[in-house]
Length: 92
Image (cartoon, rainbow, N blue to C red; front, side, top):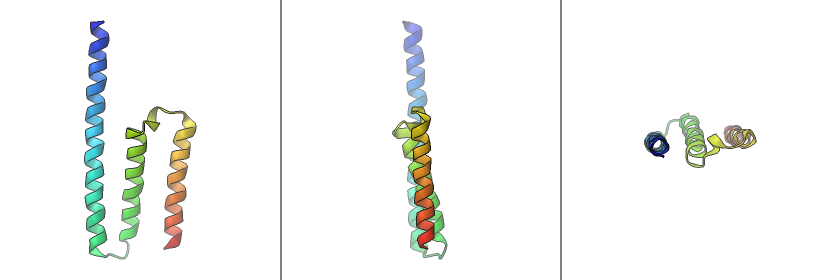
């Protein structure tokens, strides 16, 4: 029982560390998106879209736990991102 508890504690620490890193990445991408949007650059929308895609995938795979889901859900998530990214790029 002690070995199982130690392993569970190890997994929890690992997930907490990964969640913290993901959260820091999300905050950094939000700050970068804000900076680029305030600069008013002509190609800033591409960078902001890339940041949005990265944020969506980070939240989906880390916090929504799609990384452990069936392959179909992973495919649907990536397909949604691709359609969204292509759709927004086609509007500009």
